[in-house]
Amino acid sequence: MIKYCEHSCDQDRRMLAREIARRIFVRNFKPDTSDINVLAKVLSRIVSLVRSELNDEPFSRELLLCVKLHLWRRIKYGTKIPIRDIQVENSLKKL
Image 1 (cartoon, rainbow, N blue to C red):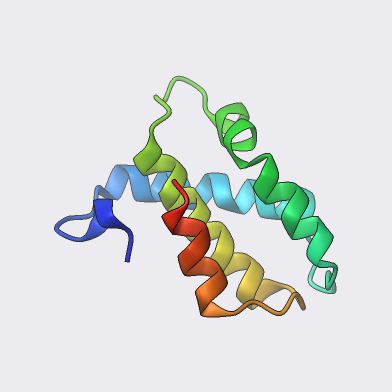
Image 2: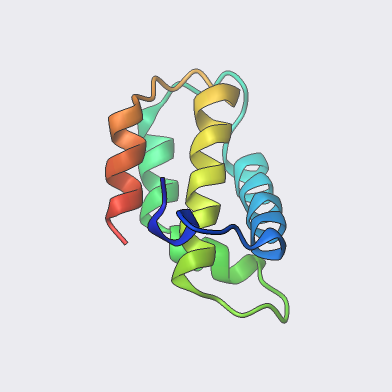
């Protein structure tokens, strides 16, 4: 669970984060992607990728974490990259 989401979910932020995660996923992954280096490359640039997808919306840590969560889900269930839950947890704790 993300610390910002424990008590309430901002639905507007969630919808925006889901869309940004979808765009990042479509541009960087394919269903047959199994190379962990693709994942590492995307995660190393995640802040700039999220910022580039914003129009007039403000950037925040909360939005970034929400995008990361939705992106991890897409990667786990939409590619062949083996993802363990502990990887997701550790990634989300880094911010």
